[in-house]
Length: 241
Ligand SMILES: Nc1ncnc2c1ncn2[C@@H]1O[C@H](COP(=O)(O)OP(=O)(O)OP(=O)(O)O)[C@@H](O)[C@H]1O
Ligand SMILES: [Mg+2]
Image (cartoon, rainbow, N blue to C red):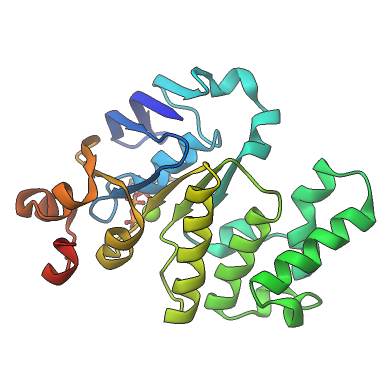
């Protein structure tokens, strides 16, 4: 997937993105870092085809994403920064089932996939619960599971490690690792320097509407100027690997 020269502004607001670029190849994990309010979430929403840029190209397999919607939605999975913006079904089961039901016609196949994903993420005991009553960490894992359930090619994670335990961070790491190994792609927007250092092949810094970097993680995460620009702290022991 490739985003080139993206410009975007919310109605009545100043420009958030002013020529931002990002590319992610199959088998690659790319991080997007930048200060609070720099446009990371906005950029991921554009990559997912949920917001349309004013200018610029969003390409999936070198063709405009816009021309491939709505079908291409099955290929891109965005896990929202705030689970409450994503969750809308009345049970966890239905939340996991929603996208699957658009893809598979057989309800026994949908059920089989849900059981398997619930087991993988250790949320079988939550399946009949109303999602709004879950803890923030539980909600986050449910939203991730609901995306993984339909097996997208490109995973977009928006602050995946916020409000979760180290055990859940480990399982998110293994999901990302599986994506890489199956020659799929992931883009991770995060303020978590350690998680990025451990998972990402390349890093983009977004600041003042543009992206810089895009080079390998070690180069970016050892550049003090870029880290300051990203308002990111990385433990020096994680920098040299
Ligand atoms: N729906 C909206 N309407 C108007 N302005 C918005 C809207 N959503 C975001 N913004 C503004 O756009 C800018 C970029 O927001 P965005 O959420 O993309 O930043 P971010 O980098 O993801 O921040 P954070 O690190 O806090 O998650 C901010 O100034 C924000 O206030
Ligand atoms: Mg954000």
